[in-house]
Length: 172
Image (tube, rainbow, N blue to C red; front, side, top):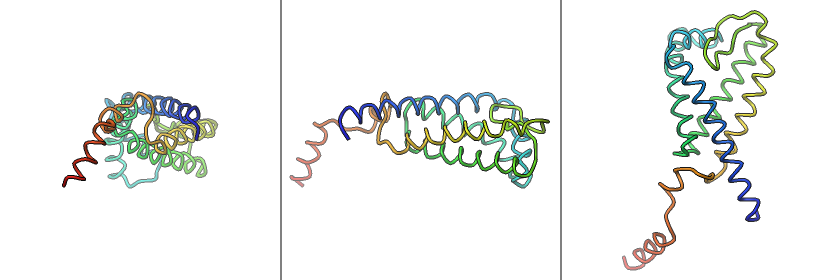
């Protein structure tokens, strides 16, 4: 890839990282103080046993916040992007599942959740949104680094560090 193409991809990765991370922070932030609503939203999908739905409902907002912060800050961004992609894939499956079973619920993506008449008309848009965010997560996961990420500061060594490592390796 040319230098210009790589630079554009790195900037696109930054946008993907910030948008996806921002969505996770918003979603987790809206739900973290409402554990009962989060549990009810997970239960509404009718995919998990009640005790597991409760655990997921309690943990999910915290996971969303951690993934979002990692993406926005660019700390272990590739790992956070993989987790993000897995979560979006699970949400797409969940929404498609309730749609196929004729269950009408508020997805609970940004708080709320539970039964909601007429919700099925929103399912295609929710799936499309999550598919776009899944694609953005996969882009970030595929890139070694994106612009303005703390990973670059924390984990990239300078050319002087690399030369010192080679010299030390030759001496030992």
